[in-house]
Image (cartoon, rainbow, N blue to C red):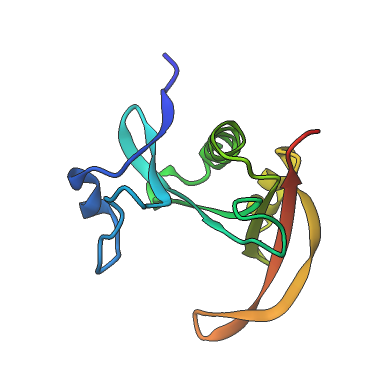
Length: 144
């Protein structure tokens, strides 16, 4: 039997799996949703406007976090595919962006498999785990 993968609004029972002090994820304005496997939260997908001089809603920065027990099972590719399909079907976005840690080769390969193109490296831009980290930016455009 194949697992059912989906994006859905957060529910109160999802909040126990999240490590955020403030929930803020259950609202009409939220741009974060649960990524689920058989209706069990496996992670969080998010997007936010990153308008870079174009019309509002023309560019979104996307993000994905999988809970540790769901990593390494190919679910990241499926989740990204759902985010891309959702945004291209339900918004007027032209450009999607994704940033990932310079050492996160698995995420970089996932983005490239989905058609995102590597645009560059922002050196030592993020402070994490006691050191400055590089971030790699990827972009995907709506097909004309």
